[in-house]
Length: 116
Image (tube, rainbow, N blue to C red; front, top):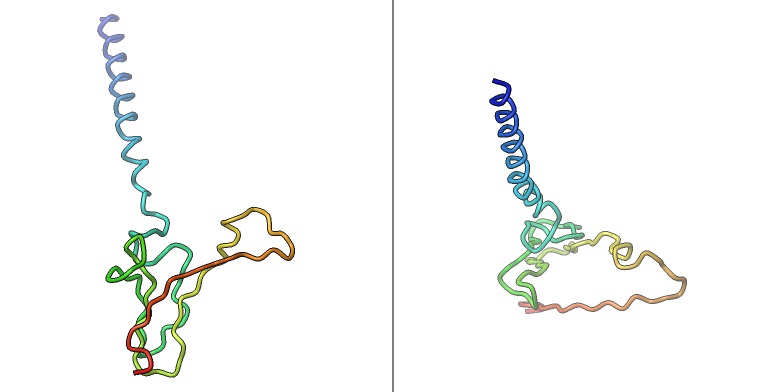
């Protein structure tokens, strides 16, 4: 009887370890899209700033320079400005901010139907 008890405990322990090991990779993948990316509804570190009536801001897939997505502003005749705003991304690029140092930035933009 004692021998059966040891074998039962051993099998229960082995089964418990296998369950824990099998569940860990599944849990590791559960938050894969938790942070903003090219796969979510809004881009990382960007938010809709102003979206007046007659304007639409979208994280578009119809036209882009690279990576398959772009910040898009579609605007009909409205005098108000429509804009995307970014968070302070400088803190993500460098842990030190030096005095009198410029940060060079660039962008690609495309216009359609402007001044027509």
